[in-house]
Image 1 (cartoon, helix red, strand yellow):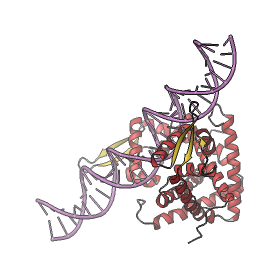
Image 2 (cartoon, helix red, strand yellow):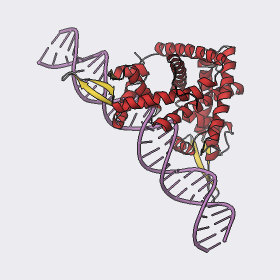
Image 3 (cartoon, rainbow over the protein chains, first blue to last red):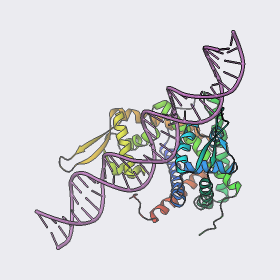
Image 4 (tube, chains in turn cyan, orange, blue, green):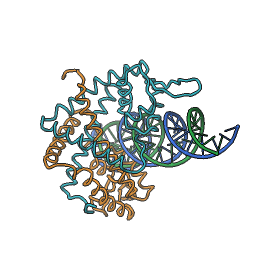
Length: 163
Length: 163
DNA sequence: CCCGGAGAGTTGATGCGTCAACTCTAGGTC
DNA sequence: GACCTAGAGTTGACGCATCAACTCTCCGGG
């Protein structure tokens, strides 16, 4: 094991600043999405995932869950809320063996398109445009490496719901 | 306005990977905190803030709110939950003019100390240790610049509760 | 046929986060 | 003294996130 010592004040400050930057960035983007499109971050994720899978096609809850890397329960709750708003609908297929498929409504497709445009622009303005080429490449590398490492870490850990 | 065009697929992928890395990192740290210390991220923030302000001293809700950069309402709700758990207590001072001060209980101090150790170690293992010196300095620079920019952005925007 | 287990999906409980509405006190101004 | 505003803090409602428990179907073995 690595030593049990906690962090130096300087390390804490680095960590705090980093967390703070993320929080502010995400908060800003989420507010923009809400303000300009009346769509939440969670709704956005679902809309886009369904859209990218082919706007007309239907997905299974399990596919959504996998694709979003969300707990199935979370997906189900989210779909319930979004069904109320008229963005998605759960359709039964198979009269006896019922698999519940999930599809976008016309309203959902419309919202997805608008949100993609607006949100993309906001990401560009608040994030991409603020990076120097060097920062871009370093951050990209870190992200990839972190995802790789953390996913490995999770899959090595005991019982987990990821496929 | 900058152009209305959304992002290229490559830019979306960069963004997705970056968000994913953050989510995984935060999820991992939060789970560790919960598992090893039975303390949530929100509880941790409050405990540490009170601790750093001097374990014995009391803070006002407004100070906490400012220091955490949380909405006052959020602080109040969080304090209510933590009071139930016995981590903090709200104490009245001044018989007539009542300002509600907030302080740690002995239990709260104990939890804060444990959590600081454990969480610090996890941050080191999952984040700090995974960075090359170059990544450290680039990410530090980006964080500082992003915080500066986003805070300026917010304060220029209309009505906001930050002081 | 009945049982038992695995997979898919849902539900309920509870904590977190945000917004809007509310209470209470203190201080001014007339 | 009456009114009015500003600041501090709380409350309620609602959406998001997670965990555990549940339903239902399918499937394989006895």
